[in-house]
Image 1 (tube, one colour):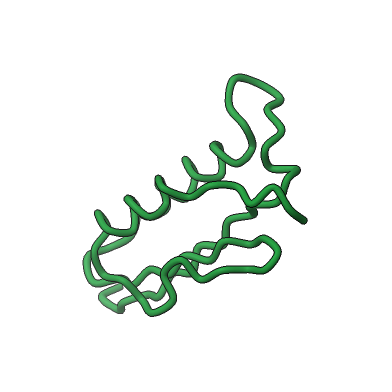
Image 2 (tube, one colour):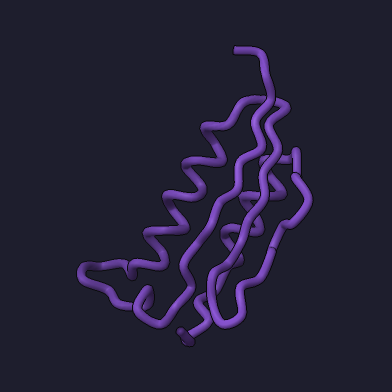
Amino acid sequence: PGQRTHWVLVVDASMSMSHAPGETSRFEHAKTLAAQLVKATRQGDGLSVVLMGDPPRAVIGAPAFSRDAVLKEVADLTPTHGS
């Protein structure tokens, strides 16, 4: 308690994540889960976001401390349609 944490969210953006077994794709579900994790962080925690695709891409490399900015980046993620 009281210590800050650096969270690294890794989102799979491969083609298989575009599959939609229900109303939403696996990718959209992953984005929803990532947003829930961001909202659950404590004030002062840092967040980074990595999009796994070919090649992997650090969307937010250095820790970001604004939840709103991270939520916007997560909402703007798109699948790579690659491996």
